Each structure stands twice: as structure tokens, then as C-alpha cells.
Image (cartoon, rainbow, N blue to C red; front, side, top):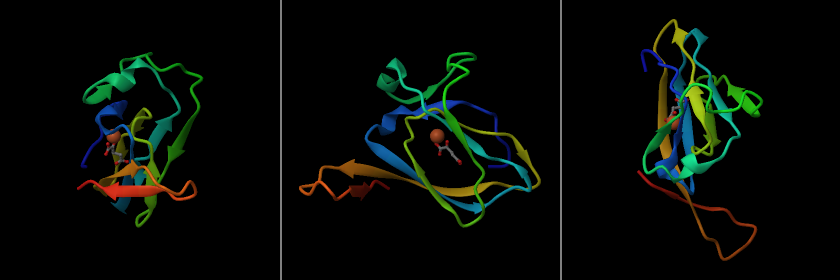
Length: 115
Ligand SMILES: O=C(O)CCC(=O)C(=O)O
Ligand SMILES: [Fe+2]
């Protein structure tokens, strides 16, 4: 990315998946990603769901991730998330989807790489 448009979205086409992002290069100013714990009918949206202004309650719990180069961050992509505007260089990340598949053993989390 060379810029971010601050689009709050949920990757609803990836229900049942985790997103795995490896941050390769970060800008010098900002470029964090905020992830909110919010659910609703938007989850049934067939593609990526784009939230409108005020659609997510202000008191929704959220976390601001400010990754460092080389970090791997895994989260639920159906949670609303937004990359904040940044400056001072490009923001480069590699991203893939991990599909959570049923496991015969309760203690084991099985994932399938989708790319
Ligand atoms: O680059 C990021 O931190 C998240 C990008 C994103 O929202 C996505 O890949 O769906
Ligand atoms: Fe996303």
C-alpha cells in the first residue's frame, strides 16, 4: 500500500477463516490497523462488507495493532477492521487465509492454507 483510505470493512466472504498477515515493511508514521469486536447481520454479506459512518457503536471494544516489520498477526477477518492513514514510505504486508477445519481431536486446531 502507498496510502490508506480508512475503509472500515469486514471480509465476510472468509467466514470460518483466520487472516494471517506478515508485515514486511512499515511506514515511519502510523499505519496501524484497528480491529473491533462487533457482530451482526453484516456477517451474511456475500463479499467484503463496507461499514457506513456511525454503523458500529462507539463503545465497541477494539484493539489497535501497530505491527513492526517481520511480525505475523492472525485475527478473525469478519471482525470490522480498518487500516489508518500513514506517511513516510510504503506499507508492505503478505496476507493469506487459514481455513479452520474440523479436527477429530478436541485439543487440536486444524487449519488449511487457502492460497
Ligand atoms: O494490512 C492490513 O493490516 C490489513 C489489510 C486488510 O484489511 C485485508 O487484507 O483484508
Ligand atoms: Fe480486510
